Structure formats: structure tokens, C-alpha cells
Image (cartoon, rainbow, N blue to C red; front, top):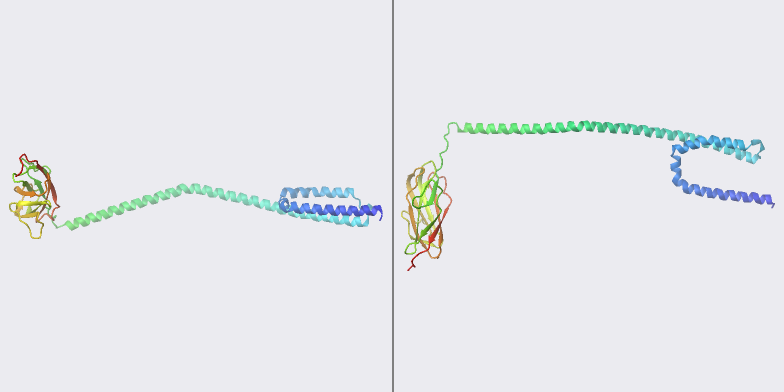
Length: 312
């Protein structure tokens, strides 16, 4: 094998190795950068604009008549390949240009639509607020009118119902108060009093019943209730024990009427207790024919003054 043939073989091997290495590099970097390069209109424009320059250089450096037959075929294939690539680049350039133009148009349309929507929202917000306020005012007005109509209807019904019917009479009201000399019945009732103990150790309490209403009280009932450990020294005048009531309770029925503002006679209650205490509670209840119902228990406190002499 001659030296020339060896050089040709080594040259081919070197070309193949370089081609394989270049392919590997292109494959490695192309999978990342190829989509970006292929989708870039600037890069495609550069390739399209530079292709005529490359072709002119090829035509200038290589002369067809001085080439061998094999080299001529390769040269023709290369020229055709350059033309095909140039056509592809031109087609792709136009595609990218159309795509970019559509994107710009779509962006402009979207921007115009967005601005129009924002402008409409800005105009509609005050209008919506006014509509909301108007709705609230209408609701308030409706409620006011409805309330006024209902009140008017109620008043009319009440007035119509009262036509020809007398007003119900005022109920009588009785008040119990401990009695003391010079008592002013125009003031509040006396519900606490200091009383000396009797010589026999018993305690005497005086009280009265007064009509504090502006109507006559008829058929009056009065109850006296002592504390649990207290007993009556004797039944109060006119009072008696009602069958079934507690031992500490006595009652009296007053026939006739008690005029407004008038107090009945003073009652006396004498009792004793087996508890050595200085204060005792007494309860009173009242009722009458036209009082409506039995009044709640009125509680009075009796404070016993200490004895000055020892008890026998």
C-alpha cells in the first residue's frame, strides 16, 4: 500500500471520527437548544440572509470543470441540499413571522378587551353601589310602610273593639304596714319596727291595712303568718285559724267596703317564740273581691328591744 493510499485512509477515518463526534455534540446540545433555535425568528432570519453568501463562496472557490466526476456529483448534491435547506428556512421563516404576527394581534386584542372590561367594571361599580343603596332604601321604605299600616290596622281594630264597650274597672290594691303613732299614710309602708318585749316575754305587733287604689275595695281578706318557731299568745281580735292552714297562720274576713285612701282599724298580734332572738319576721297577705288575685306575701321585720328587767 502506497503512502498516498494510507493518507487517504487516515483522512477518511479522521473525517468519520470528527463527523461522529460532531453528531454527538449536536445531539447532546441540540435536544436542549434546537427547539429554542428553531422557534426563534431572529436566528432563522440570520440563516436565511446568510445562505446566499455561503452559496456565493462555494461557487467562487470551486469550479465545476476542474473537479473530478465523483467530486462533481458531491458538489451538485451539496448545491441542491443548500437550495432545499434555503427553501425550508424560507418556509419556516414565513411560518414564524405569521405566528409572531398572530400572537401580537391576539395580544393587542386581549389587551384591548381587558382594558375595556376594566373600564366597564370601573363604571359599573358606582352604578352597582347606587342600585344596592336604592334596594336598601326601598326595603326600609317597604318595612316602614308595612309597620305603619299594621299599627294603623291594630289601632283601628282596637278602637272598633272598644266602641260600645265600657273600660274595665280599675282593680283595688291593698297595702299592709306596721303601725306606729303619727304614721303618715302618704309615705311608703313601714316594714321594720323596734318593739319592746312584754313583761311576760311575749311580743305585740300592730299593723293596719290601707286601700291605696282609686277604687273601692270590697270583701277584704287578711292573713297573718308568724315565723316557724313562733306561736300566738292568743288569736288576734277577729282572726281565726282556717282548717288546713299552718298553725302559724290566722285570717280575717272584713265585710263591706274600704274606700280609696282609707286605712282599716289597727290590728294587734301578740306572739312568743322559744328562740331567744332579737328579731322576728312576720308575713302578711291581702285579697279582696275586686283585687283580681291574692297579693304576694309582704314581709315585715320586728326588732325586739332588750329588756331592762330580768324575765321570771
